[in-house]
Amino acid sequence: MNRFKKAISILAIILNLYFVPLSFEMIVTTGGPFGFGLLILPFSIFINLLLIPSFKYLIKAIQKKKVNDN
Image 1 (cartoon, rainbow, N blue to C red):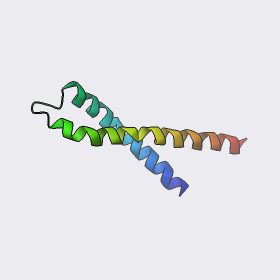
Image 2: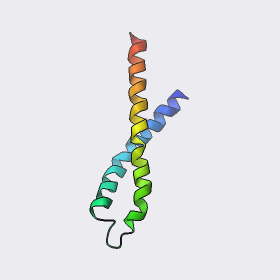
Image 3: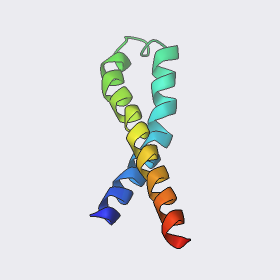
Image 4: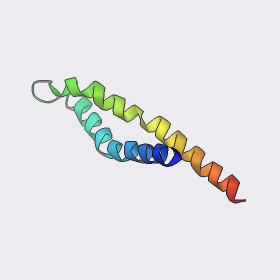
């Protein structure tokens, strides 16, 4: 289970390498010529918000590993 959580966290971070610039571009260009990009924006922002628990879990796992190693 621990390995699964770590894999999901890393996957969320990798996905955000694509979705953070995409979200920023959609906001700056106001969704493209007809504004249809704004329909995707709520889903993109939801994926961006997954960064918070992903980093939080990975930092906690790294700290726990350091404590166990000492």
